[in-house]
Structure formats: structure tokens, C-alpha cells
Image (cartoon, rainbow, N blue to C red; front, side):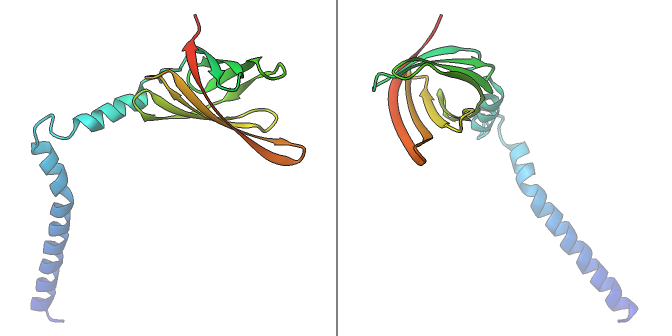
Length: 156
């Protein structure tokens, strides 16, 4: 390749690199030129929701399920809970690490595993004060699942 062709190839390579860089930056520039509230409010609200403590954090709930089971669920922050059977089952209680995520404003999906291997997936709707739960446990060597619906109130 002679000198003239080499310069031309380098020039074309530089133009291609510059074009790629400009295309990559274009959405950022477009966003920077957009009005302050154009399309950013939902992103900001979502970020604030992730950083704000969930409704259940540091609360004690009294849960009543339709089948007569009653539980107390006391949260220490948002990631630890102490549960206690109040009615419908043999007395039992424990402390668990809780995973949670907000499905929509005021509606939370929580999951935890108890010391005996029982897993609980619970959806708390703070707008309606309702709760659903799927509890999976082993009994007589077979996996069992219990689906529950109920209500809750915040204990004083």
C-alpha cells in the first residue's frame, strides 16, 4: 500500500471512529437538551422508591388469614423479621432474613426461608391492607403447599 492509500485508509478509519462516537453520544445529547420534566419523572420516582424504606420496615403487623391462622410479623428494618404464630397452629416463632421488592406503589413481594426449611412468599398490599401467602413445607417426606389470603393491621 502506498503512502497516499495509507493516508486515505487512516482518514476513513478516523471518520468511522468519530461517527461511531457521535452516534453513541446522540441519545445523551438529546436527553440533555430535553425539558427538565420530559420523561424523567418516572425514572426519578423509581429511583426514589428504591431508596425509600418500604411501608413495612420497622412495623409490627397482625395478620389474619381466612383459614383462621393468625400471625404477628415484626420487622427490624426491611431485611429482618420476627414471626410468631398467634392462632391456628402449634405455638412457633422465629427470626428470618427477608428478601423484598416493590411490585407497584404500596404492594410488596416478600420471601424468606425459616429454620426448618419452610419457605414463605408473601404479597402485602398496603393500599388495601390485604395479604396473600404461599407457604411450602415438607410433611411426611412430601412437599406441601398452602395458599392463604387475609388481611393485616399495623399493631400499636
